Amino acid sequence: MRDQTGNVLESSVPKVLITRRWPLAVEAELQRRYELTIRNSALSVAEWHSALKEYDAICPCVIDKISADMLKVISPRTRLFANFGVGYNHIDLVAAAARGISVTNTPDVLTHATADLAMTIMLMLARRAGEGERQLRSRQWHGWYPTHLMGTQVTGATLGIIGMGRIGMAMAQKAHDGFGMKILYHNRKPVNESVVYAMKAEYCADMQDLLQRSDFVALHCPGGKNNRHLINAEALAQMKPGAFLINTARGDVVDEDALVTALQKGQIAGAGLDVFEREPEVAAALLAMENVVLLPHLGSATTATREAMGWRVLSNLDAFFKNEPLPDRVV
Ligand code: DGY
Image (tube, rainbow, N blue to C red; front, side):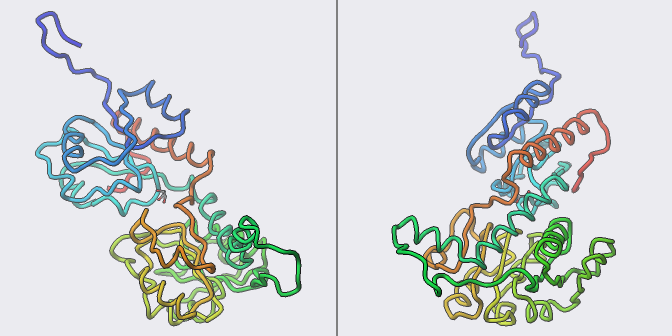
């Protein structure tokens, strides 16, 4: 818009960029409240720099790696990264804070969807479901016989949870209540929650103890430099030969090369991965293995959850532009 003398007038409606398509209902509401730009592909460094000059808030997601280099802009207009997702290890928080950019995330709303997916992977791995489906679809199934695709019993087995936060606790509860599993957990400190006591979950201060005793090990800890390669060759060597590893957390928590070696040597029985160290690249060796379940980062991918994540971002944007405390402030 221009004034009578032809000068460009700045709109008072905040300018917001979302870096990928969102559920339509949320996009429509964003459009109603803000001057919205929807982008549907990765931004180059130069595009990040110009976006930081143009938008009041940017809503990235896990696939947008926001490094310190991306943020090298003098006096950015952007004051908020309202992340679409609970994990924020893809954002350099120190660099963002140094430029006066706040960061929010979307906790709580994806807990059950992600824990449900971890259960799906556990069951698929144990019962060789992917392998069976591949066999059937390639017309290699020639009928029932007593030793066909014999798997591992989930009911009554021991599940070791690494990272007993919201998602870890939800998986533990589903596994305990639904499948009678014994729960072990490793965390920075014991969790003082009634649900943890109710399922008699046993705290393992030493991760090695959990690795040695679990039939299934599920990762639910945050990504980032503190947990990078937490599951390395030494950790994998501690697991039982018949045990399975499940990762729905972040790819870099597992040393993927060490995992490939452990699987090739038969040190563990299998692995189920929803996240990858070099995502979306997946190691060719994994693709060739029958005893792995590989999913394309589907943890939160239900319609209800993705919409809830969008609404949660929206409430952070609204609070920010009304100068109210941010409901889900990270920095
Ligand atoms: C999350 O919310 O962290 C999911 O992994 C998708 O980003």
